[in-house]
Amino acid sequence: MLRCNGIGPKGEIFVCGIVGMVAKSPVNQELYDGMLLLQHRGQDAAGLVTSEGSTFHMHKGPGLVRDVFRTRNMRTLAGNVGIAHVRYPTAGSAWSSAEAQPFYVNSPFGIVLGHNGNLTNSEALRRELFRDDLRHVNTDSDSEVLLNVLAHELSRNAAGFHLDANTIFKAVAGVHKRVRGAYAVVAMIAGYGLLAFRDPFGIRPLGIGSRETEAGTEFMVASETVALDALGFTPLRDVAPGEAVFIDDQGVFQSRQCAEHTELAPCIFEFVYLARPDSVIDGISVYDTRLRMGESLARKIEREFPGLDVDVVMPIPDSSRPAAMQLAKHLNLSYREGFIKNRYIGRTFIMPGQAVRRKSVRQKLNALGTEFKGKNVLIVDDSIVRGTTSQEIVQMARDAGARKVHFASAAPPVRFPNVYGIDMPTRSELIASRRSVEEIAREIGCDRLIYQDLDDLIDDVRATNPAIARFETSCFDGKYITGDVTAEYLNCLEANREDGDRQRSREATTQLDLNLESAE
Image (cartoon, rainbow, N blue to C red; front, side):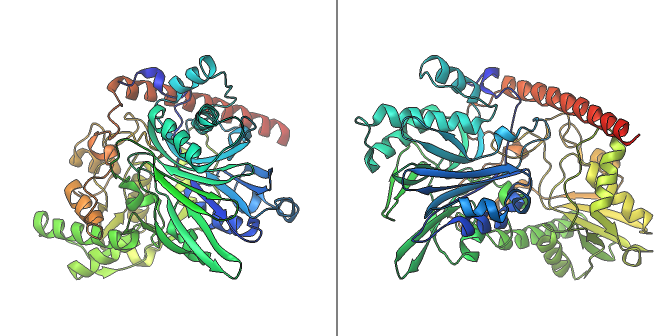
């Protein structure tokens, strides 16, 4: 069983976007466009690596894609094969530009790797790499750990200094035997081609697409099909749990199942919030799923709250819109856009104090007074995590003149941390962790709180692909699908997260003091 030392030193959890391409012409511009299409999966850093023969060209840095890359950077990224990554770190992890992905090692063959997910045994692997494999990991990122495990397995399985697809697939099998947690990976091996693989449970998404050109077939792999669609690739299928896909520099496609035991159990929170609505993941339309969530909420209101007095239904933009529209339609209620989102505000600095967080919400959302005044409103959001945003939204509605404010969540209560790649707080920060629905309603200040039922959510997501028997739902029910997450692990995660938050708070306060001194 997993022990406390299985977690990384800062308790890092990531949700990221990855994309890789093997083409017949330069890939730099299309990988850049792919990152833009996956920007919602990570806004803190971006990186792009291309391969020209046996030479890698890399550029990466902190910030949005549009801020990291300039024309002069793009000119240096020559080659017809490449991978790209957008990164989003947790608030509890200190930012370091060294942790922008993709990561690179030059031994044994020269490998770059981008990773979406989180390893639950990264610290144990870190010690094994140093002690047994004689490899050095330079950052706190578990993605660098994963890269070095892959490099070691390639070295161990290769005959001399030559690789073939069979050797690469054996190396991925070795990765599956050693690594625990969630991981969707794109990697390049210098002089050979593009490698992509997914963990044995398929927790994080990864799809494959192809495009026919006069010069031949081109391939792309990406976290979401929206990147494939927009760039003219026809989605073929998803990378299967435990499967590895290898596309050589000439565009020859090969794949193999590399894990001994597999079960498709995608993260259900992808469909609730993370993925773009125009994506299809594991055969499931994200948009259709969110419509069904609204229908399920409407049926619950009819069943359990038949006398609920509502004049108008309003979404919190943007991900809750489909659910809110369908709920209003099912209940024959008016649908209105009561909150206007500022699309041009960047991420606010993480600074201590509740007042700063409250200010952040009001900078991003503004209430339309004419839509609230004198009305009983039902606000629909995709989920409630900490509750601080929900509390501020309810107060905004009251300040705008709402007579009653009811609140509905398209997801069930979030009661447990997510350890598989989502920036989700520890139990002490989750508003639903130790509270009843009535207590949460009082905490956020609404007149009535309605949560989606987990069984209904699962049915909603499964409806368009009944072949999926199970989903990763740990943040709702505390059942961790990999079977290695103990109470001790979660306690250690919480302690590390709190230590990281305190360090981040001290750093932010120090920086604020320096800024004030400079202004004086």
